[in-house]
Image (cartoon, rainbow, N blue to C red; front, side):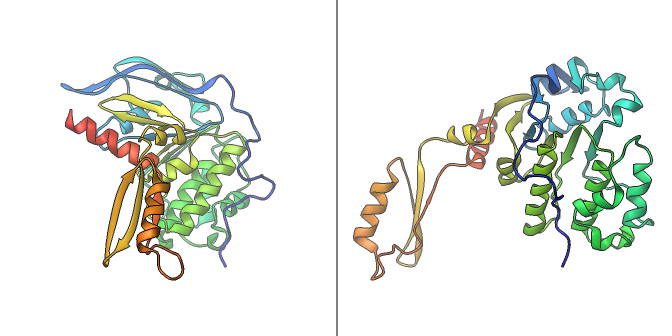
Length: 305
């Protein structure tokens, strides 16, 4: 049986460090162009210390460029940016030691075991986390002596997370972190992020899994056309999808659906007409609007404009 990702001593779902008024990330009027292509057009964003923010947007919206500027990997054209109180363009080694990054490209440690790789990275930090505890925290205790080259894609991704958190980062960037994970591993990873956040780590998450953003994020920011077009809690954004509910059922062997603001009346009518001897309507489901509904509606309207 493989180890889970939860670190004993942390209370799941509880913030041990309150979010402060000083933002971990502050962006004002950020601009960036590549030749005559304007990628960022005055983007504004604040991420509170200790919070989890999901940055969403389709390919080409400016999401990746924004994150690269925040990490000090790309220079901006205009606007102001502060990350942990410093301008990333003038970042020092000490500043870089305060952030952790899980990118879509894995670090090249294929010839090292899991323990060797994490120990190697830990040496670059003044006060790293315990190597064995970090490996256990990401669920790789059973693979501690396994070479990175022999790990499956999902477990290689867990190693990437261990490498990013062994330095005890104040700010953690997670770029599509659960790509290649099976459903169980995704849920375990969500618990890890919740534990890190509860311990005071600020997290900036980019993901194409809208259920992941809805589950993990305190706030969601949606990037379209180089600007933040929506920013709020997942629940608040989901409510903007409208008051309609979708009622679905099976009739004559086919699925039927109806969008309505009065789902109870629809269900009552269906029950009178279709309920079987057990009183159940075949395949009956009532679905409320989700963050994904609102996001897809925004994308559709943006492309139609």
